[in-house]
Length: 542
Image 1: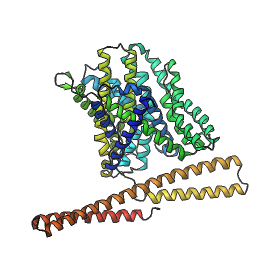
Image 2: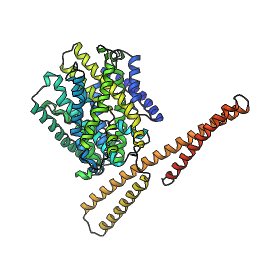
Image 3: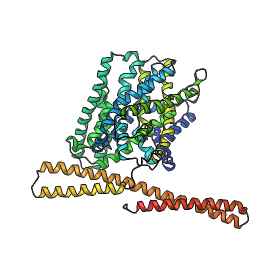
Image 4: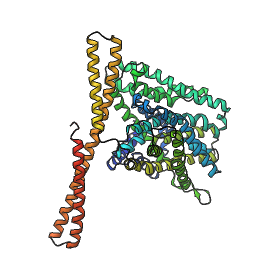
């Protein structure tokens, strides 16, 4: 095995361990991964880990797999409810956020100039993996309407941001890539439409291969290679100035997940999603650790102008992106929508967590810069500057937004209703009843073979989606119950210890009574929470 393979395996093992810690303590897993990479960089300085592994190649594969997996988990039926808002957030919202953040950065820090626009665009995408991790690790299920908006935006705006960065903002910094503005606009929109077309072709071709094989290994291999094929085919058009690879990966996933709705044969969703969940997570681990590894602490503390370091500038950029650019774009776009109130809009603006998409985009942008600009100190500075600012903003977003999003949803009353399980169960049972009726209609010869196959596939896919939601609810309720029981046991152990210490005369009565009262109140509160949880849990299947 080559040294590069040993390194990748080592990084994956390290990352899996760090992600497990994050899951245990309920915080977004990118945080320990990035910090782990930072520590690794201090322990192995000058080792050249990103060059050995090939960070640009890994970044592109990561974008492809993460976006494909996000598309693969998207339900078009759910998306229809929020499609106008999602479409605006993923197009106009991306452009608005990029311009607001970029122009503000460029105006506040005039020495940066046009580089501010590029950084603003890199930091535009919200990350599906980071967002869902934030909500799941916090044990929070936000209202389906809001989740649908956030999911749809996170999927589409990543692909839009990739096209925007490469076709619009990179040429502002690199003279060799500059073309007239009307060509830039043409490249931008053609990249979107070409991505949709390529995604459909790949979904149809690979889907046919999956259906023709009964071997689970072949299905796994075909699924795992789909995003790479879609992204790769899209990027072959770069010779014409187009970059539809990211969009192709997204739509390949969407078309394969919603095959019957787009005129394709239904595919084995469960095995495909299971495969891509693991593949995309493996790539995320590598990218986050490499991002942390590339950070130089001395560079973060470098003064750009007297009193302003790269670190402090990064913090200011984070404030601009989180508290100015994102809220302005969300509130402007959602203003005409009467279904969203102020609480909904505020949460959507706050839940725009940054993650792997920005990290991968930063790596790709730096690679393009170093390829086209002269190999001098200024280019090295630009590369380090982009990486460092993105690092600071990502960490700020993950910590500030990531750790507070579940709490905010609860405070605003945006969590899913108490009777979500009963509602989803009723929908599933109704769909099953409809499926039985369809079978009866077909058996009696009232409908054609083609119509029966199409409707049967649609109903079966809907049942699968609903049962998947039910499984997630069961897992969340069980985890909550186990945690409450464990906390109660810990409190009882503490109380018993204080009782023993008091009986042996090792602590005074005043201390014992104080601790006893405190712990008994804590135990009572935990018992009440457990009873409430058990009541809601009683309706769930074992």
